[in-house]
Amino acid sequence: MKQRIITGVIAGAGFLGIIILGGIPFTVLIFLLATIAMGEILKMKGISPYTYRGAIAFLFMWLLLLPEWLLPFNALHVERAEMFLLLIVVLLAVTVISKNAFTFDEAGFVILSSVYIGLGFHYFLEARFLDEGLIFIFFVLILVWVTDSGAYFCGRFLGKHKLWPEISPKKTIEGSLGGIMAAVIFGLVYAWFFPVFDSLIITVACILIVSAAGQLGDLVESALKRHYSVKDSGQVLPGHGGILDRFDSLIFVMPVLYLLTFI
Image 1: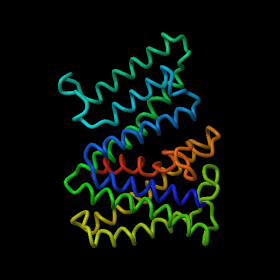
Image 2: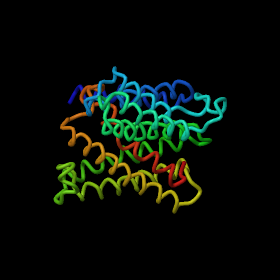
Image 3: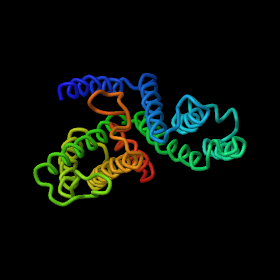
């Protein structure tokens, strides 16, 4: 527990400091986090990050992750989506060239994993560079963290009905609702001092979406770990597991917020 607290304090302070700093340091940090997370998910599947299959996976993920100003799409006269589709075609061709040493199943895993991690971190990166990006990022982070803490304590003291025992046996319906309530309370307090949206209705809607999507993102990673029979995604953070364990909710929330035009 002591190690967990020390790691949490040091890593949390450094992470928040770089978010505040923004710019190149923040971009580099997100690149490193996404790269480590991709390595973790590849290892779950049994794909070594140091093989050509791993290299292809990182290439796909980086293509979706990196901001426009780092990728020469304009010079190449192509869109990001067009390049991604071209690489999918190449990837499928590799299954033939390799005589199924690189299987269709692995190709599908690489594509889905790169979208999951690449776009999740990409929209986190993009949100920071909005006009009020710092206020918005802290709003989302607080909602995700408060939801997680609220769900834990409400589930521990009030939980009776299992939320989804086949995926995460310890989570309860009471804990989930408690996490949402905690997010609403803390989110409204934050928005009182640092208005994120002009409308109270939009603010509450965003709070509910982030809280619910964050819990779903946590369940998605739990399902992934259960399928591959691993306890943690990695051991990068002593006492906290891997990068995916810490960012599973956030990288699920950010694309949802983008799709619903909150970003």
